[in-house]
Image (tube, rainbow, N blue to C red):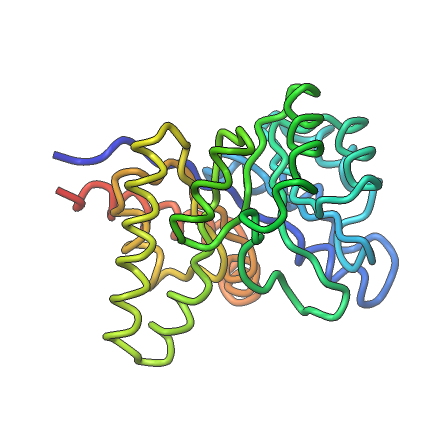
Length: 251
């Protein structure tokens, strides 16, 4: 028996990264969002960073204007980002760790040690009508923190698993996958909606899609990289196929 269909959220940040490398308006993230919707994406993810290295404020309205897909707004847990989120009011707001010097998000948010800082932000986002998620490591103490904060969704960081697979570290990759599976089971058992993301590729997405508790997979960098070679539409359709195939094979 196959599993229920899992949603695919496509992160369009790196379309903006390419645009910003030269300036001007091309390539347009909004156009990428529209194409993603046509290719089978279920949502659009955008991360508005403090340094605006990729997505910028005008992109938020531009994307909303071209697609009715739900928008997942990744944001640091700061007052400045909270103000933008409350003004923009996306479908979902995902709190992520952020450091200026990092190339991309490195690891999950340490919700367990930041509860006092996160609580007012989670509460304000929830009151604003947004589905709040926390991007966390697959650890039970982080699941506990999400529950304490009353965030209804967690997105489990899959970056370490992908790195181990690509490095040929089979035993360590299997252990990391077991951590992801355990966190998914425990979170779902206690009422959390489980999402996964970071670094997933055509070859690594299946193992995560086969976890029955997973409801959404958010993928960006790999899809955009493949799009340079095969096109954005085929890259998204291939990722959608890999997820659907894994869900069908799960049992």
